Image 1 (cartoon, rainbow over the protein chains, first blue to last red):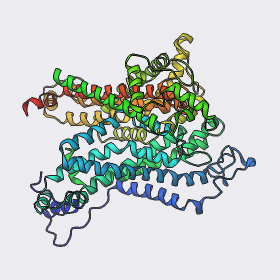
Image 2: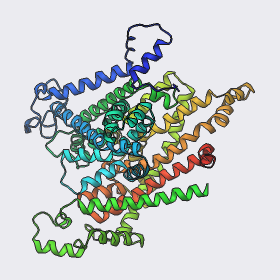
Image 3: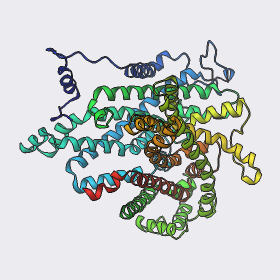
Length: 303
Length: 318
């Protein structure tokens, strides 16, 4: 363990490298790992496809045309058509936006609630810590999907409600991480100094601790997006998310279930798209974790 | 150790009480009017009023909770508003069927997961290791409901070996019963292998590099003995706790899997009661799941403490 922990990962890197190479200028950035590159490429292209969806979709995503029902994949309809004759590829592209928006907004909800919770718990300790963390324990005592179902059971389904519910379900892990990061930071000298200057608690929490807590939180949040996408699509699949004629991936797979034996492509396309997105974000998150936060790795005893 | 178990048990009880409040609170507070949910939005007001009185919805919320929780403790779970049947037996049937499914999946996850983990560790860095890594990575990345679709496409629609959905009791014959179990079990196993196999792999690799394994090899013991008797025993410690946690995770997995395969277990009961606004059944079923989940993580903690003396004695030492 280093004697004094530097404030940010980039400083830590430069300290590490100057020990064996006499570099005067700022040392060159480490090359990106293959993992990170692949993650960036996969996630980036899916995000791009989602953003451009309305302009690049070859066909309208919601126009019913009974003459083109169940057309297998061909030159006109690359991924075939569904039971209403709608182009699967166009629906898939439009669905990309829904999945990404759902995953990202759910994660933002978890961050917005979980990070202040964790900061408060880790900084104030005592009964506040105890109360907040036991609350997190209670939320974690129910499987995530059940908690989501429970929250959604009582209102008419809509995609934004699903995002909200998924965000709610994943508050505890974010809060716990924010707490543990705060615990380590709270003993740092710059925090002691701020206390000695009689800074207000909110100044210390949000201006001193939070900026230094971001790197691990961002990495965790990016990985959390995949959990949110998977849970959200599972809820949509169960009928508690996006409603027809929406082209949410979970809903698309759910609707395609009845036609699996005649038209498997309707279900396979969104399924593979979802796998690709999840793998892409996972690679990105894991790669970023190793790059941004070498300390995290050493803390977990991998080095 | 006894004190530790007692503390942990007390904690589980407290968590379950809190979960019951959460379950009750969400289902009772969120909707503007449960009676309208049951009767539909266009029900005449006097009918709504009558149902509210019948369900005791006009009482203060804490009274409703106490009545519900009291009934739960005395074994009276109330009546399903949809099926007009007592919830107790309904729930027991569903739990029994779900336990067949999760039990079978759990055993397979343990055996296959540990097996793959050991195989990967022994071929550390070689093609087999990478293959297993990629395979288990897919297990996490692929959503359960998509695994289920693939299983149905391959084994039911394409090969025609298995029924696409449904359940048959054992009395219908062992083969029929087993055939209906295979597809959902396979789906659950795919989705949950990764944790076990990855952890077994990494701890096995670590143990294989430890001095006492080198010593065992230096003594001239056959490799099989070194691995099975010396290395595996220690490498499995972390795996066992993860297995206990996985049993809890399976409780979440059954919701989706049972729905797809129309398997009449606990998960499908929950989805069914949501779709039909059967709140008493929903509350009871979720509480059962939370109990299993909490007990599984308790078991994981206890096993970890039992198997790892550092934790067990840590409190006394300092």
